[in-house]
Length: 183
Ligand SMILES: [Zn+2]
Image 1: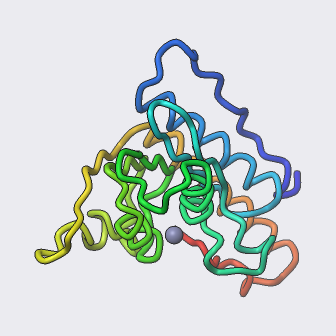
Image 2: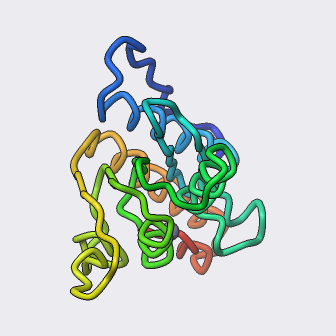
Image 3: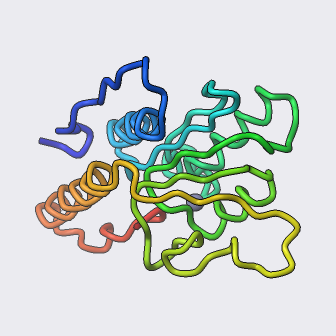
């Protein structure tokens, strides 16, 4: 099995219950899209008035761009769809806690809420390592919800790195283990 063969199937949540788990399932499915092109499996969706207005996966390697995180791409899509850079009434769903860049983008785009599946104690800036939302003088704060589909989203990333480590061992190239979008 090569890295592009993702052993995890996509989820098929009921369309009738559009709760946090439903939208996180969509983000999870985008994370699988990332895996299938050998990117670290992180996915994100932005929801506005109950509709998905942004949906993306990590594309750092594909684009050769360190800013091509799932959240950044989904936020850009959402702003275009809504026609306003202010995403005041929108919620970002992302499978991993946002890094400094994406936490900053969430704040600058004035999202009302961020929901993430599992925390990142090394780089997470919404409670895992630090919390940008705690900036005392910031003119915008958002609601944070964590732990939605936590095990599924974490397992996906862990399995991806385990598989990549095994491949690198075979290829005798241990230096390729560290990722630009490691978690
Ligand atoms: Zn990020």
